[in-house]
Image (cartoon, rainbow, N blue to C red; front, side, top):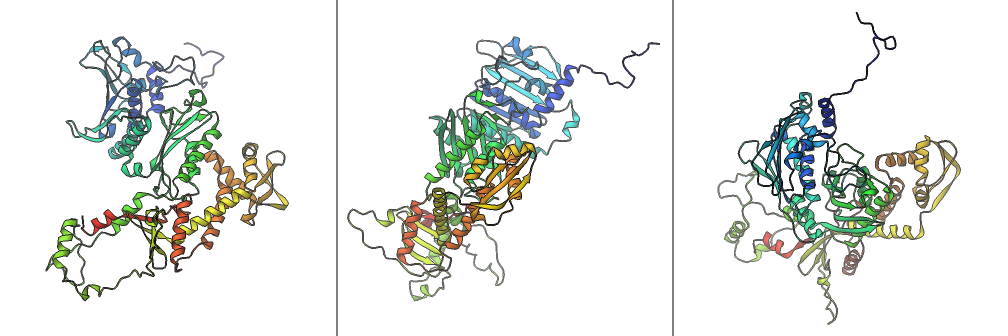
Length: 625
């Protein structure tokens, strides 16, 4: 009977080298979280191969089939087995992990997919013969001849069949399909000059196309604008502001939507670094910081922003799925995003989202005319909305002869006064030609009706003036600074050494906002001054709130947000109140000031201050066109 080594007890754990199959399955758990992760890796490979058109076919939410076809450079027959080996890649040579110009670089995706599913690669290079190789559950087959014109077809079937426990964590087919749609759309935005087609073949045959984007042409901004219109919709493209800024070798391009075109969640935020879609806390925090003065906390901006920089200034190798990045100078990137977006929003002036007018026109739709003999007193019938032509014909058929009876209706909107526009000099611009036109009336002591050359404008007088006063107060604060109130006895706040170092890094910025903080030894800080406008302040709670924001987003807007909340309240109380009757010159003066003030298209909470209706849309409501 063999005896155990005297140096190793029976319960001593033994270190073993894992086999290749287990290693691949562990790697797959990091790289391939769900079918959408597999689609992302395979489409990224096709982009890196120089493809001009990429087609993706899925079945059952990608669980039973994912097939990616591209017209890229292809893989030679002798390199197909190597492509399925771990850490084998054509993207980098291993000399510099920071000099990365491609989507993929680790060489993990294909072997990981082959370890948990049934993977087949068919490829052909220009001037060569097509070949195919298959791997299932980590077992690789031989290279075989195949038929293919050019490019590569990667087919993945029965994802996670080799690790059935993972299938229990999959969501419904619909949810997985939606996740794949989101991945493809993000990649399509990153590459506007490449055509993408996503097809669901769950029912067999050629299936149905769920997303298609043809290759765009023109310069980068034209191509990007066209691709964003296809992916995010025409409404986003109509209400987005062009972003083009540069600072210290960092370039920021893309489009950001007006504050009045906001969303209830962050689903319309798309961020890219060197063409790579990312979900980075620093960038998300910077986007929120650029809009925090224009949106309430329950609203989120819409944007597609692209950051380009030297690969050595950003590390993309900090997350297995490459969804996060780390910048060498994060403060520079954040400052670039905030300043560029705020400049674009200021340049937009009084502009508001066109969707506001669309919603208003929708609310104006006429009630359907019930058919004779179908209406019963006391009951309301829901009917399909008739065409405008049918409405117009019906109204003409039922309209009585002109007479005094037509003027016997009672109107809920009372017109306070009709404004006569004074005659213009020969060289003066007609008031109606100005963006917000000439005031014609005030209704319900709150809404100004103005006439423009192409339609009419309805202005909420209180919301509009509130924004104007708020912008004046902010301008005065920026010029004179924030007055600080010295505490009679400094408040000592005990923190960890890490938190103390983190908040002292931004002490100079806090000082500009009236919050004076000094190190007090160990992990403590002494709060010596607070912003005077805030009155009595719980200094400890404010410091902890700032630290929470720093940990979550890498930056804090707590102090500035509280100061501007006070200014917003002051502006609300100091603005024209609802219910006040205004004279003609007052209304026109308000319109002119709105035209000259940045951000006047939305109130302090992101709601529109005016609605513009085109004459053509108004005439369409009445069946005149």
